[in-house]
Length: 233
Image 1 (tube, helix red, strand yellow):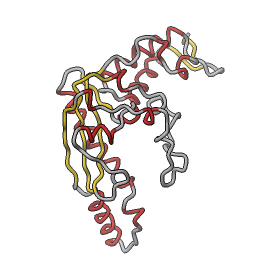
Image 2 (cartoon, rainbow, N blue to C red):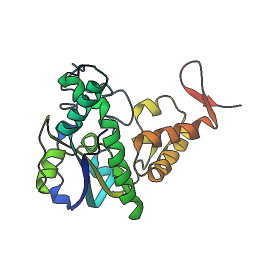
Image 3 (cartoon, one colour):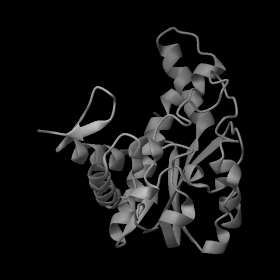
Image 4 (cartoon, helix red, strand yellow):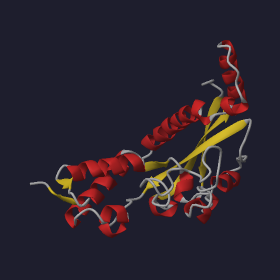
């Protein structure tokens, strides 16, 4: 990927964070986009994705920091075209702008910067996809004086939010139904405690925290033929 981006950090207050239920209820997540006529494929498919993701106000306390990476997509597209041309291959606009060529690297750069900031501030965590937690990123960034464009062709900006973390699950009643329906009560307690520990350990990375919690459960339980988990003998 061409090295054509820059990082930024901006502190914001609670009044600048715009919560929008369209981020939470799937309205935006299910909008069609190229090759995905039904919207985001992981919607209602993974525990760390919508609609199971935690609400912003339930897991994050101020002060908040917007960490953003702005990337020149047009220059990168030209870089891709040159690479194709060097191999005597044609390159369509769709190929030149394809997210597979840049998004993973951009998100890695942003994630590492956000986690570095969170490491420097006691008890801070990172919301890696703040839209999933209910934040309207466009409106929140505008309140902070940073204006984003939808479907940009020149500058793309990816955003994460850092803030003080709160314990995600205070009781087993708050666990997702998909967990409560298959685990006995003692295993649910193990899951809850391990998830909270993993959530803090991995700076708010829900996907890693869920894997950490299931790993703790698997130490003492196994899945039975019915699909429900039972104590190991």
